[in-house]
Image (cartoon, rainbow, N blue to C red; front, side, top):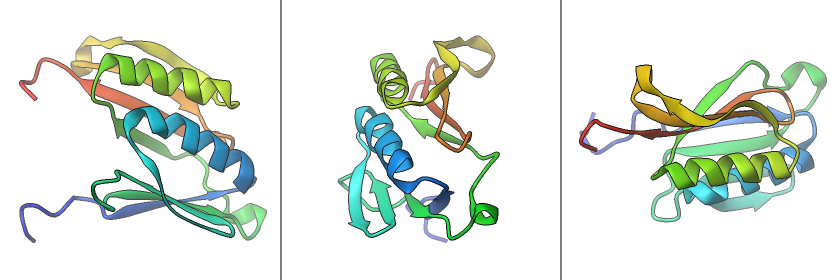
Length: 132
């Protein structure tokens, strides 16, 4: 494996209400610099505009049994302000607060956690004090 290759290429999330989830992810991820790179009927792919991997693929679930539930995804934030903006945007479009933005000293990070429309735990994390 080449050193420059990401650990994960993409992650798929299958939504019970694609339109509600698409609004949620587009709004929540925008403050983190993640945009919709591809959109088709029932599919939206989110990535950094400078590269297409890693990415998040949001898809319409074919049935109730195919809905993604119980997932925890943590997205990198470039600053505390980006974490705050992620949290505000996610809540404004119907995300449910799990943990408001705050410092988590045990992880040397500033984080916020929200639930997406299907109850998945979506986090923005800004690592601090690691020289990064």
